[in-house]
Image (tube, rainbow, N blue to C red; front, top):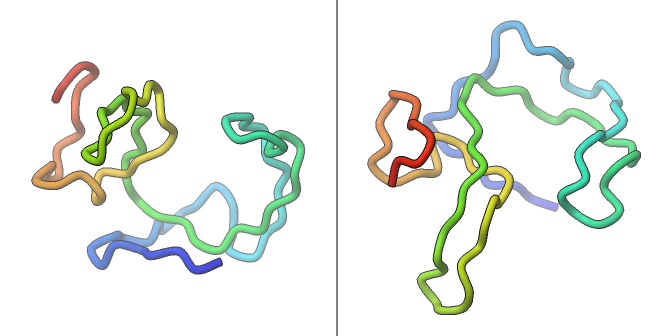
Length: 86
């Protein structure tokens, strides 16, 4: 699996988990995820958001999607977005 990393994403200087460290996932927002083993492949200094959005290709509103990072939001700038901000 290839993940596209935004060019302006800064690596974390003091990550909680080191690259190549193995961890057990506690999150459960994808079926089968909770309890799975994962390997850390990168640690970055960013802000992650849980968002709700209406797809541009149509379809129902997606509520509480996890996760979107600051650098993926068009024209977000560097300041953290506030709850409820559009």
